[in-house]
Length: 287
Image 1 (spheres, rainbow, N blue to C red):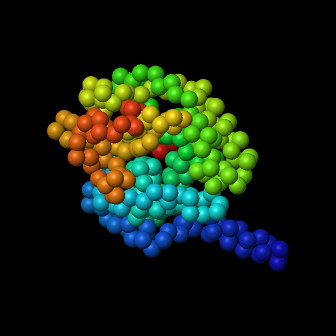
Image 2 (cartoon, rainbow, N blue to C red):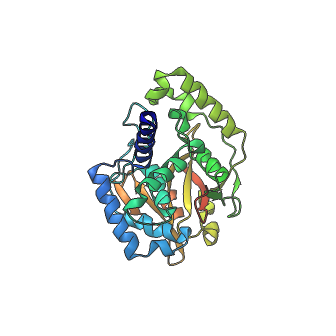
Image 3 (spheres, rainbow, N blue to C red):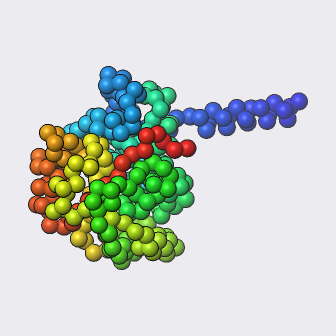
């Protein structure tokens, strides 16, 4: 009888622990509470996912830009930061919120699980290399998970044949790779896999020709001339008066903002940027 009681107590304890919503900082909880109200006011739950995305992205307008927010713990953990964003975490957070089934405080744990699905290969946190560091690799894995569709070729993209090796050749920039040589070996294996795939991109002087196939809320991955690197920036398409702008977390503007110039004109002023890849979100979050 005593053993049965102990087993029951252990079961109840573990069940309550596993169902406990992840703890957020007070700043992040404040942002999330404001978002639940925003979602209710804009009836986001009644919209298809692709129509939610632009509205959710707009919610974050003015949020301060902050780089390197994910490398704040010794262990690889699903870090949540809603009050400071870089281009990658901005896109992650917007998509994680867009894929929610309902919008209330009980959805906090589901939001964090969505972050894990969007940030880590096979939604599994094993080590630093589980995180999808290269955007082209992220796009591939999100397609495998049926979360996104690569629409670059459909929009007029041409083959993007670039050798990816930036992380392995600049491992001194990544403390985790410096501390553990086995992680560097894994990164090289990931780079080899990326280089064996077929990707497409739209050169930046051809973007205006593709604009009629770009929809509001499509994910824009900006490719780069930087050796060994696939992309250097992410954001969302923002359609206005028939033109496509970039809604993004800007390091130059120090906040989430909409580009003052249409996308092609905006990119023409940045020599390191070579073109774009395009992705479109699935209608629902795949299980």
